Image 1 (cartoon, protein in one colour):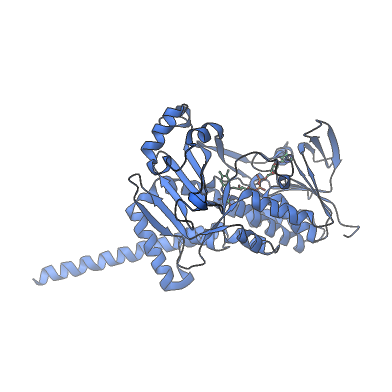
Image 2 (tube, rainbow, N blue to C red):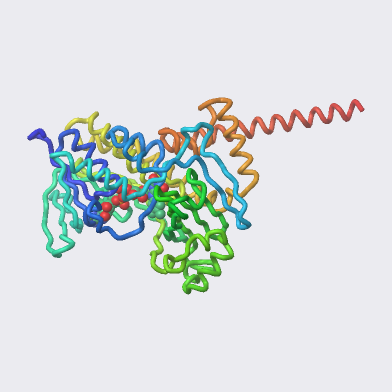
Length: 444
Ligand SMILES: Cc1cc2nc3c(=O)[nH]c(=O)nc-3n(C[C@H](O)[C@H](O)[C@H](O)COP(=O)(O)OP(=O)(O)OC[C@H]3O[C@@H](n4cnc5c(N)ncnc54)[C@H](O)[C@@H]3O)c2cc1C
């Protein structure tokens, strides 16, 4: 560790904060990471277990840390989605035209522990768990932390502060105080609840193991990721209000009636459905966008603190990990110039994370409803057929987002060009057919 390097203080030992601690620790910076939670490695965390989809760009960021292989050992590759209809019929939609086109289902806890352990193994990285950041004084470069056990507060100076403290970031709020910063926070009218389908006899999988499972119902949505022990972690998404809505599912009877009608295949597979439903909290789904990701060469935001998205493109963690790789490159290109590094980081990332926010909202409509449309299914198979024929020159937007590291906004633009080409080709073919028909009719 060089004597002249500034200390990097990271708030948040989640996926982004822990990964960045490794990136910067390896560059020789002294790194201090604060998190309000206790250390996940000691098994005291209580909360949703959450199973996340790790895709190409998240893996790329982990590869650079030498952690991708370990993550894949703890993951189950999902090759596509199985759509479950109300009558029990199922259909499979592959994620891409090639065998390596998969999304990896992994427990959030597992990947977070691996990142914290790798960071902690570096001599110059130190974790301080159970410390909540309450306040940041950006002029004085100090932050106040409360010890969650004793309730005592301490005032700590910093050289460079990274806010990796998630969607409701305290660092962001204090950094933007008194500044001309745009900030948009958009709640979905729908909430999210985790449910768990236990493994079958002898640890067998109740459904196809290597797939993402989806129960689209229009007015509700359920999807499930496989776990290594044979169980599935389900995300149940429903409006907060109305019928059906979380506000009307308040008794065991109403929950059972609703599930028996909408997801009859699941009722017998989750024997403690009503207990789980009552016990597990309903979580808000939020999109945030902000114009100001950094301040004065001394503070920067990362991951959900800078750009939270709703989870329907399974990209929040992937984008947070990608942020770390991009920020690390910017720091390398601007040695000692934090203002320059942070400006470049924001200009490289923000357009793309804004595009991801839109994609994630749009995919909610696709997963909850449009996935059932025969037109959409036909279009998907056409795209996959063309991608096999034309190699990587043609592929679906979903595949570009999940199977490549093409920046999000560029992937959207490529998809638009493909759509235009397809519409033009379709239109031209229709025109040609019409001319042909007229010509034939005139001759007869
Ligand atoms: C239901 C759901 C499903 C999802 N599915 C996927 C998926 O399939 N694929 C995917 O890529 N992403 C998914 N995501 C998104 C993903 O979980 C997040 O984008 C990712 O965790 C962001 O990482 P982060 O490090 O920015 O924030 P977090 O992982 O939230 O970490 C923030 C950390 O900061 C700490 N902290 C917060 N406030 C303070 C404070 N004041 N002081 C000190 N510490 C603080 C917290 O304790 C936490 O450890 C999903 C999210 C949800 C809600």
